[in-house]
Image 1: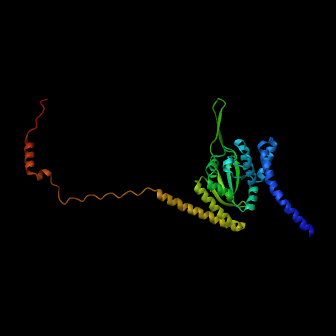
Image 2: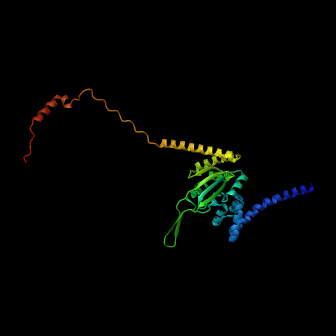
Length: 294
């Protein structure tokens, strides 16, 4: 009994020490990531990423200027992390472990290229600049989602050589899709294509509610539930499309105006109603017309 009491006392004394030591260690790693040799930088970044959002926060605190932007992006897993401030997993198993630990669903982005590079595919750049930077969406993602991305293949690029040693490289095209997954990696909601910020935010909120409903379902019940959910969404989308088409359809042509009613009797010439003028016209018609001499 005394041994157990001593052990509990020792652990209680050490817990504050470790709680203080962990942030201190992350801060040290962040400093190494900024200024160490390449091997140390790579190892420091890997360790900071293993710490998840805490590693990102330590790196953000260490980055007092723009000089460590590339290192910060590698720690966060997203380009322009100094503005976005969202941590992205690139290992789905690690993302699922984080989702199980936090009870959050996973937002998994599949893209061409890499999200931590400036020139990923066009759609992912749109997401990065329009969605992830949006205040409401950013808070929703940070507080209610575990974020993950995976590159499905390199992004197509074109290089323009100006002939003077300078070159311009740009991506040609690209498509992306977001998947909302539960902590087991089961699909809750696909979010294909491009949305406006409000529509994307509403879709994320709806998917988060669905994740709570599906949390305790076994695979068989989940399969039936998610199938019914998708069928309902398709039906509502079809109804919405039909309403939109009806609203955009041109109005039917107006019916032709009715023909004027037929006169009750034959019309009478105006000259017949004026006897003086009629007689004068008759006299004028009797005068022979002069002919040209040639």
